[in-house]
Structure formats: structure tokens, C-alpha cells
Amino acid sequence: MNPARRCSALFGQLRVSSRCGRSARRPFSPAPGPGPGPAGTRCCHPGGGGGGGGGGRGTSCHQMKPSGAASPATAPVCPMGGSSSSSSSSSSSRLFGTLAQSLNSAPLAQPDPYSEESPDQDLDHEVDPDQLLRECEEALQRRPARPHRDLVYPSGTVPCHHQHNPSIRVMQWNILAQALGEGKDGFIRCPLEALNWEERKYLILEEILTYRPDILCLQEVDHYYDTFLPIMSSLGYQGSFLAKPWSPCLDVEQNNGPDGCALFYRRSRFSLQDTAHLRLSAMMLPTNQVAIVQTLNCRVTGRWLCVAVTHLKARSGWERLRSAQGADLLQSLRSITARGSSQSEAASGSVPLVVCGDFNAEPTEDVYRRFRSSPLGLNSAYKLLSSDGQTEPAYTTWKIRPSGESCSTLDYIWYTHEALSVESLLDIPTEEQIGPDRLPSYHYPSDHLSLLCDINFREEPHRLI
Image 1: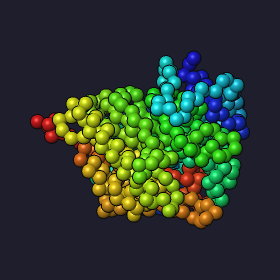
Image 2: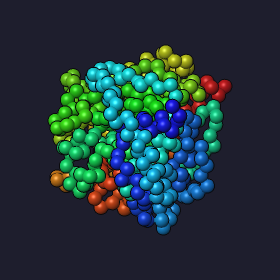
Image 3: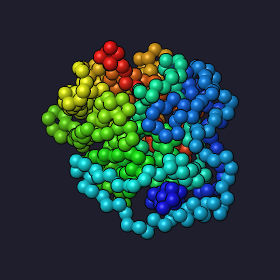
Image 4: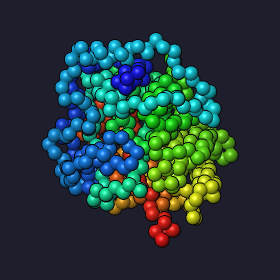
């Protein structure tokens, strides 16, 4: 099968009607403001700062601006956010006609969602991510483009990339479980049509394909086996999934199974050393929240990296439970990183750690303080967007429910600051870009914003001798 047909066949389960392919997508915000004033330099190209392992990130960016500089009068569309001209009906027919071929095929077998391992799809050849991205664009022609976001370099300069230590791109995102978005969450300012899975899934995939992370951490995934596993496997990723034991998705009629956490890593960049699927406890009692922890070996540097993804208990009134869940996760991470260190070739210390998640906790909560003061030496990457390097963004989620409007910082990327450095971060869209109806919307698929950073291994003292 040629690559183009293979791409289309993989997207067969993601098909929307050809009526979507009508006109070029428009930027949602005509004049975004400067946003929450980060320190450093911004890159107008979201892939401009990417390191090794990420396809499509080698494009150079020639438009740099200080982080506090005014934005241009017209916001550039996020690269690959939309085509420059309308697609003809014949090309749409060819595209979606091919996608339709697999609609009647048997669905992927779904293993026990509570099992310790999720098998990967065995594909002989990886597909072209640009081709998949073009198919997303075709499907989203009648929707406005996602908000444009810049890469920000906290140091103020765009670093020179070294072949022996290329950066690692990490993406964290609560993508909003489909069953919850349509059936339980009550986004009163978001039309039901905007939440239609037949189009919303393309917005999610478009965001991932635009930035092409080396490590992808997701929460509220309820379409793992029929969408994310086959697509991400075809792009060269290996995935792991762990469902919540009592997922609220199961209370929704015509659900797609339980939601949970998913962790993907690029097979060309990492090899897997160990996996732990955790059910978080509080006061020695198991809870409904889970975490995936994987120890990886970087094929480029030979260094080990431990990556965790989690989703803590939601809603106000559960602060003590979240704190206990965080304490339980930190204890497990200390054990896992220490064990990994004894198995690796590291001269001393634990394996460097990256923890991604929707913590459902503002920085004022106890669980945040636990992570900030942990013996693991963790720092929150997105604090580096602030002028003092100590303040989290004003929000990572902004939604309107029957109970009122909620604008909160709940999502984080934690990293071992003595062993890892943050090279760049994806900035936070402005209020104007998000729009008066907040999230989710026609132009953004989740009530949570994706977070993304490029990290590097710091040089170890024994390697400098």
C-alpha cells in the first residue's frame, strides 16, 4: 500500500463527511495581545525550537520577538492550521472516499482497560505525519483555526542544538473525554455541535501533529483503542493506557468505555526499560485516580529518563484527598527513580524525572507544595514563563458551567531541575484568543490548554572530566 493510501486507511475511523472541506480556515483571533508577560524570546514558529526526534521541527524561524513585545496586528495562523485555498469538491471526494473504505471494517479489539499493559499495534511502516496533518486540515475546513501560540525561550536566546544532546519535546494535555464533554460536564456556552466527536477528534490530532512531541502525556482519554493507539502507533510512538477503575464516562449512555491516562513516547528516540501502572491511594485506601510511570532510555544520549502521567481528584472540597494522592505518587516515584538509578550507568543520584498531569489543584493547594518541596528536586516548567520565574500562568483551563465561570491553573509539567533544563515553552493564549465563550469551543477541542516544553539533559559532572 502506498503511503498516501496507508494514511487515509488509518484515518478511516476518523472520517467526517466531505461537506467539511469547503474553505480555508481563518485565524480565530484577529489581534491577540501579548499574553502573560514571560521572560525571554518568542519564536513565531511552533516547531522552531525543537530538538532531535521530532519530525518537522527542523524548520528555522527567522522572526524572533522579545517576550514583552506587542503582537502583530494580524495573528499568523498556527503552521499547518489551515490550507491557503479552498479544496475542490473532487479532491475532497478522493480524500474522504478513501477514508470511507475502513468504516465497515472490524473495530480494534479492546483489551481489558484495567489490565497492566496495553498492547501496541504492530505496523510494518510508519506513515507520513504531514499527510495525516493535511487530512486533519481537510476535515476542519469549516472550523476556525486554533489559537496561534509562540514558543518562548526563557533564557532570552534561541539555543544552538547539539547532536549529542538534542532537546526532548514533552506535551501535557487533558483532552476532555468525549462522554464527559457531551454528557456530564455542562459547558453551557459551547454548542453541542462543537463537541461532535466526528470533528473534535481532528482538532485534538491536529494539535498533536503540529507540535510532534517526543513524549505525549494525556488525561481523559476514552478513545484510546479506536483512535489514539492506532494513529500514534502509525506515527512511530509506543503507547500505554490505564483507565480509572470507576470512570464517570460509564454513566453516560452510548459511552466509548472508561477514560484514563495515556503515555506515548517516540520509539526512534527512546527504548522502554520499565513500566508501572499505579492506582493512587489516600490514607491507605485505593482511590479512583491512576498514574502511569515509565523509565526510558534515550537512544541519542544513553541517559535514562523517568516519565509519569496522572490525573488527580477533581472539584473543590477534595483538597486533602488530592494531597494524599500526591504524597502516594511521590513516594512511588522516589522508589522507581532510585531503582532505575541502580540499574542504569548513572554515577550517582536518581534517574531524572518528568511528571505531567492535570492535578486539579491551584498553586495554593497542599499537593502543589508537596511537589515543589519534594526531595526529588522538582520544579514546575511553566513558572519560567513569568518575569520572576516563580509564578505559574494565570490559567491552564477556562470554562463556563452552570455553576459559573472557572479560570484556573490546574495542569503542570514538573521536572528534576538539577538534571534537566527547560529550553523553551509554548505560551498561553490570551483571553481574546480564547474568546468570550471560553473552552471548549469550535476552535479548541478541550476545556484544558495543552502544555509543551523542550527539555535537555544537563551535563553530568563525571561526563565533563
